[in-house]
Image (cartoon, rainbow, N blue to C red):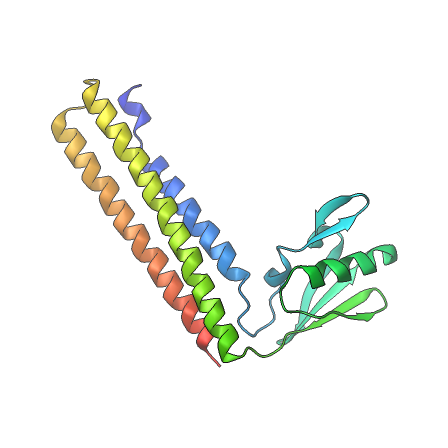
Amino acid sequence: MSLAAYDIKEIETKMRASIDALKREFSGLRTGRASANLLDPVQVMVYGSRMPLNQVATVSVPEPRMISVQVWDRSNVQAVDKAIREANLGLNPIMDGQVLRLPIPALTSDRRNELVKLAHKYAEQSKIAIRNVRRDAMDLLKKLEKDGKMSQDDHRGNSEKVQELTDKLIKEVDSTTVTKEAEIQKV
């Protein structure tokens, strides 16, 4: 293993991946407004296999409180309806030929509180992932120093860089969470 094995850019890329995952999770949290991303986790059983909803239908948002799902193959309408109901998103599709209309109900204060708790859970998972990348980077730095491939001063300096990066990205997770919480609580 050489000094080239330590790359702060690669470490940042790995840490940022957890923030990207957090943002995807947050996009699926319902905030009372319709969003096509709300249906991203829905998997439909068609043609003998599970497929993402967007591979069997077009999802659009014609109104602020309505999602429209245009199923391409008429024989799949029932399967899409069933998949949406079983996804536990709190949505009840209304069938209209090959189109499913999904009215978005207003959020109750209890549901808002549940969504805030869920957002905090996702944020904590993201922070754990960032800390795990930091731990791996610190372990690598120790090994490089132990093997004589990095001086003690370089080890200390690089450790500080990794810690600064970790702190910066944890703050980014916190600010993203605060923004999402405000969005959920907004009436």
